[in-house]
Image 1 (spheres, rainbow, N blue to C red):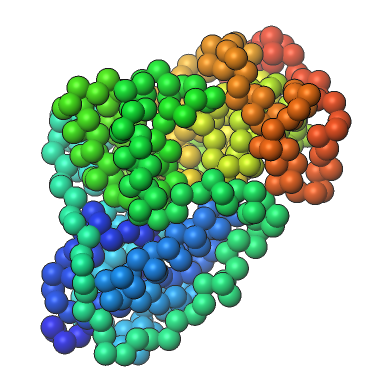
Image 2 (tube, rainbow, N blue to C red; image 1 turned 135 degrees about the horizontal axis):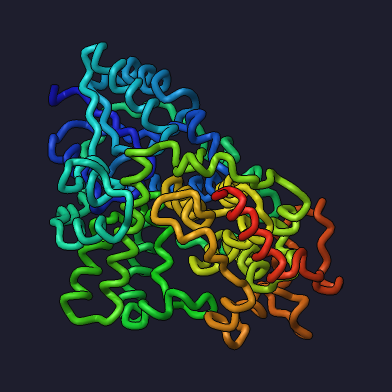
Length: 470
């Protein structure tokens, strides 16, 4: 067995450090064959996420070369690709890090069963989360449906220390043929938007670690309050790197723990947000329908609208509500959106515009470079009122009031809305270069009137809520 290579099927674990699968594989002393498979499940990613994944894969390939390995690229159904590689290379097994979304789980079960039935070693590792979703249980042995008790359960729960990156790995005598990443054209659907978004991406393990260090060097002290201010650089901005596994969650958690032990004021809040991400995966594992159906079935009868002209105005950042529009435009320019702004934009779509949360969920999945299946689903259901830990439906965020509270000097709105400034900055103008030409948007046009009066929209939402409860 020591002579037979191991195939390492890499997915969202594109780093060398804090990588349990890689550390265990290197420790065997066997030749290692890392492979990335562009399978149908990966092909189904939204435009921005698939483009950003391509950047992550390219950077990880360069990192592997530093320890003597190459990343083989293959396209096709995962099982067929892996079986073909086993036949070509004489590999004795396939290892991978677990994923938990409804598309990945059945695929991985099929792969493991088929490989084992062929007498091969098929082994999956933890790696994407601090705690496997089935490990954290209530006192009754069930799963948590509310975040606060989940947080109490994991706050002081032990988290494995991150493994160091290997300095060297054993390469096979012959490398299998690899496809070319550029031939996959993973950014095709981004069109002209890719050039606008590219400067805002911090790709790879070194960039992720630099962001974490910069955050812990100062902003963490103000995190509890500054995390709600979209006009301030008050967050870690690690979401994109955690999404693609460019930094390990255990590494981030232990860094946060050290900051808390040092008395850093915002460290506890930061750790809580890392646990919120874990909670999303906990729920997705136990209730996978959260990604596509109302978590609370009683919401199935709610009269949300499907895609509609008002929702198009929302997608275009042309609702006439500056806080909402700034949020949407930030996404087109940078590839991401501030968390407070996500809540406001989501509430406006689902409540003021009475549009189904799945319209927003799919749009974010197509436009966010930090798209995460669990966090995106839980966030949309939370703000819509149909999900776990949801705000009461009658709590309707007022975009104007939220702007006064969290963007008092209008820094965020002016940054991204050209029509609100006599001399708009480059980011405000870049929005018009990023969006589809078919929208026909022009910074010279006046800023649009609101789609709906905020008080009227709130009253309509509450009436719909009352009718559902009747």
